[in-house]
Image (cartoon, rainbow, N blue to C red; front, side):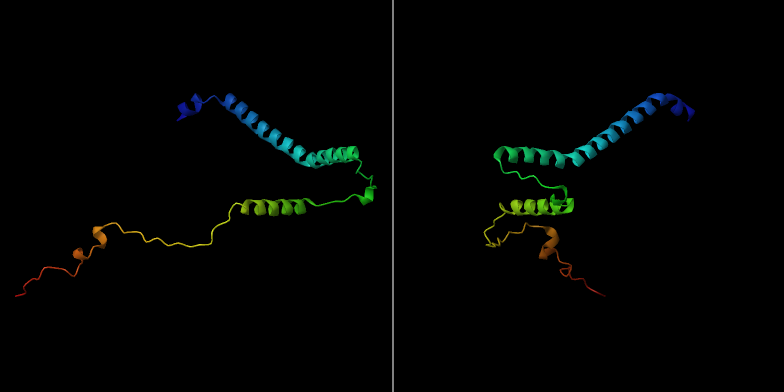
Length: 122
């Protein structure tokens, strides 16, 4: 039993484990920053485009419109469901096709249990 424990190179295992955990946590932290700052970057891009077109009006701090993330998620889900249903137009005609059953000795009447040979009782 001790041979199995000696055959494993434990320092390498700890290094691989530490590298794996650090890669996962680094990716998670990066995703947090991306999701946190993406709306701000998109709003900055929208403001620049509107200023170029002359349609942007400076707002005061209290006048800034705020839409909660839950509302954005609900709107996105509704749009996704709406657009995914566009290609699902069906003809509303129901057709029933009779399928021939394949022969199976299990459902055959000739092998019925009541068809036993007559026996004579004495």
